[in-house]
Amino acid sequence: MREQMQTRLESLRKEFETGQAELEKIERHRTYLREMMLQISGAIQVLEELLRQGQPAKYNGTRLGEAQAAFSQANEANVQQTKI
Image 1 (cartoon, rainbow, N blue to C red):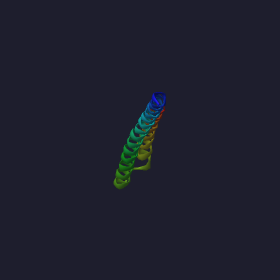
Image 2 (cartoon, helix red, strand yellow):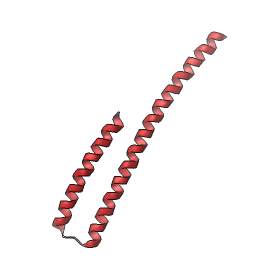
Image 3 (cartoon, helix red, strand yellow):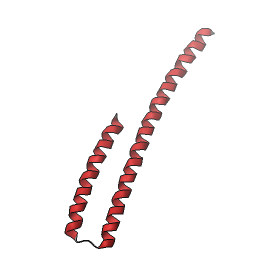
Image 4 (cartoon, one colour):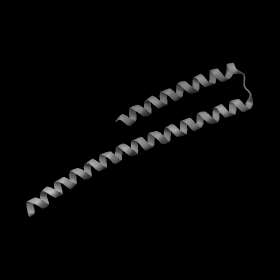
């Protein structure tokens, strides 16, 4: 009987550790998604402002290119962080 309890205890501990690891993975993904949504929200806000102001296309293109480059760099950093 004692051996069965010991075996069950070890099994439960392994399941618990697996659950903890999975929960940490989900939390990292949740953080990544939250950051991405904030970045997308900011990009939407900038583009809406530029459209409302009626800025020349050349100006928009330059600013948009800079924003896209920054967004791409942040996205790559978040993807790398999520893989950890």
